Length: 160
Image 1 (cartoon, rainbow, N blue to C red):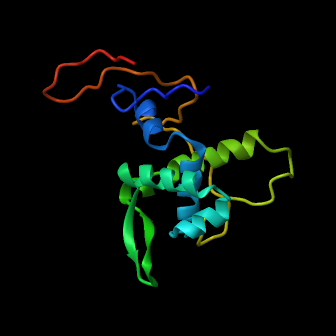
Image 2 (image 1 turned 90 degrees about the vertical axis):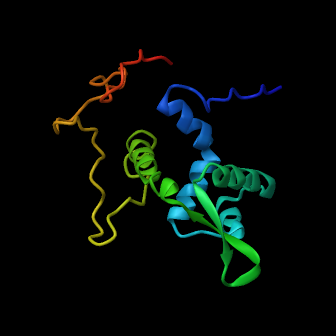
Image 3 (image 1 turned 45 degrees about the vertical axis):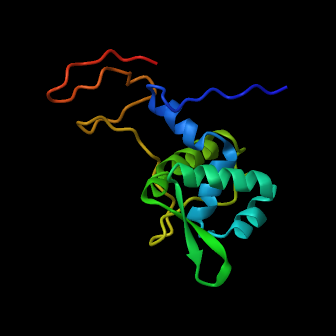
């Protein structure tokens, strides 16, 4: 029997709070499809092959969390469109990072027959790189959690 998921909405961790909003694979795949131009319930359902009740609950959660906004469908008075908000549009970095990680770690050489490319040039995207404030490239062990330093505020201890 599955247990109830812990509510991470108040966690003092950016990863935990992000997972509270978009933490299951269907939500990110719905967002991926929206970046590909899909906006109607039926388009998402057809492209993902997702059960209607699951798609409906994921879209509701994405709307409730400000990732999508519902707009009237100009082509049909009986339906509406799911449109990415500016908050939702910012997920492009997450999707590119996941794509690049998956491309590098989940396929055998020559198995993946599509690439993520720059629209104007058609060239593959450069590998995302984590950078320090001074422009240095950072590796997987070159960062840590620390109290946020804001002008006029005393430092709070980092907690998880």
